[in-house]
Length: 513
Image 1 (spheres, rainbow, N blue to C red):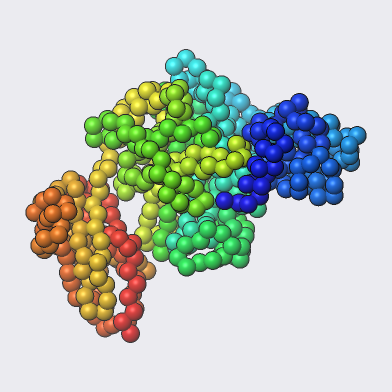
Image 2 (image 1 turned 135 degrees about the vertical axis):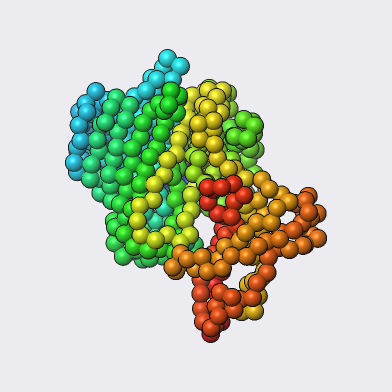
């Protein structure tokens, strides 16, 4: 946990009032108001003591610049009230475009090329007689910056990188090679985005499209949450050469509470892997009821919080089953669904003292190994309404677009220059021997296919079937002359047409020189 957050929270509590709501009149003085709002947004003013020292003034001017507030007089005791009003108004309106006059409503059907920072476009639908309003903002790189129904804002937009948005990791580098639709980490509270928005189009009252060049989340050489042994951003530019285009439509195939997301990521070069959040949805802190939806029987399964650490989140649940987040009373909910093979869903919770920062999110994660240059097409859905209405919508979607939610699985238990061994099975065909394909990650070619039909007593007990799921082959079959190779072992699905699933670990690096 960031020490600044703990110190800020403790400082506010020591003064006898709570930090969560910032509004003029709720603080002991205007000076405390200014310092508290700055602290709430991590512009650390130093001690919250009502003394407007140089640090407080510096942070106040930084906040005013970043949030593009109207020119304010120099901060002093005489002007603290004016600053308190301005900071409170900025905080309450932080999710609004710079200039409401630049917001095109659903009745305006046009395309805006290279929209300015304050531009936004709204589309509308209706669920149970009440309007649904969805807005995309140039400020957030064309990501969905607002989703409302029955007066409730669903989305957390505390900083760039949240919203309902797309992001993807390349070559398993995590955030260190991570094109991100809303913008870069450096954008933070800015009213603009490093992402280049090329076009936002209104296609119908309920339908819009965007086309962008996404920012990399990290600047070149900047430390981040990295994977694959990386410590700093490996990208050499601020904006990715990857292209991204997306359409959003409220209402689908007669289902009024289903929101369709169609997206295309264009890779301009070959990569070893592509792992996509397609999309992720950051919801406000009060969406704390978490569920998985099982399309096999229509059940909604509660997922209690585990709080296993998964920085920067407290990990909640990961599954092949579609995800739902709801308020505790079930009055508001948002579900995630796709029929794309191999999709994984995550439910995550970020609990911090700052109420503007705390959030809950779901991910739809889809991976490709390898990932040659070209277009990658994604069709996914969000379902909005009460928990009951979302449940009904998920049932209807699963009938329209059935999905294999129990893909094959297994492990590579041994890999060296002599033998490669492990096991693989498909829960949909427990007593059948599956085929395992060995894929050369660099070329994408299948270099060997073997049957996983050998006996293993431990598997019979663990899986509750005949246990005939082991495979074994000599390494010389894929590296006949020795040398080095990077391979992915994948088990074929028992269902025709479904994609194969990578075994764990996802890649095997062999050096037999």
